[in-house]
Length: 253
Ligand SMILES: [Zn+2]
Image (cartoon, rainbow, N blue to C red; front, side, top):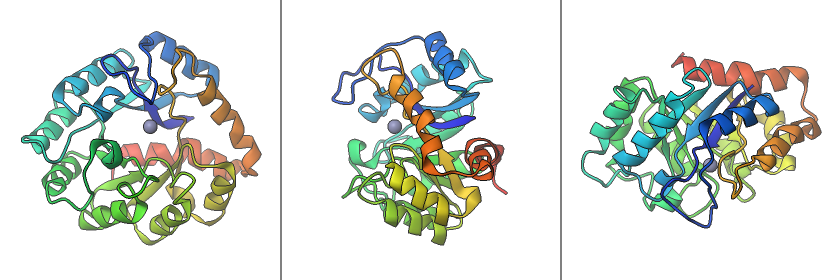
């Protein structure tokens, strides 16, 4: 299984999100226990401090187990050099994509500064994963508008709309060819509705492992176990956990 939404430990930031400084080997041991072969890893500290330093920290973390951990760095579109930093992330740092958190990082997906960032990312074959589900910033329709402006970029809704906007997330994924959806923190009744109606190749799964206030990732293990309660078919399960993330990470069709 590929977990499309996990986080690094928090090394520099204490926040209401929790976050502790667990080691990479502890994290891989959690993955082994939960049956997760590969994980997309997003920065924790970068949510609050989208700087080259947090991308360096992320690259060093995933670089310990490059066959298991795939890093997505972050930038703030209003900072000088954001597009150049994406180039550095996708080149020397060996990262695989970009994570944006418009709600915590404080910007709109309609800002012009995102266009050069997305152009560089698309040119490097990277994936954009955005936090979603917490208006006013980070709604699926805002993210879908950015995806439509950059049709060669593969864009992922990181949370499937959460509790408040999953219906909008589902509609946006149905309507927007290069938009995908990760069920992560999405409530089970919404996960069932999404699986019933979304294009089958567009559904991914994530645990948000790493955001815990403890070194153990118990709640992420519980999220993996919860999948069985969604009424999911074996074909849907295999697509969501293996085929879809693998195809997305392999690059644009
Ligand atoms: Zn997250």
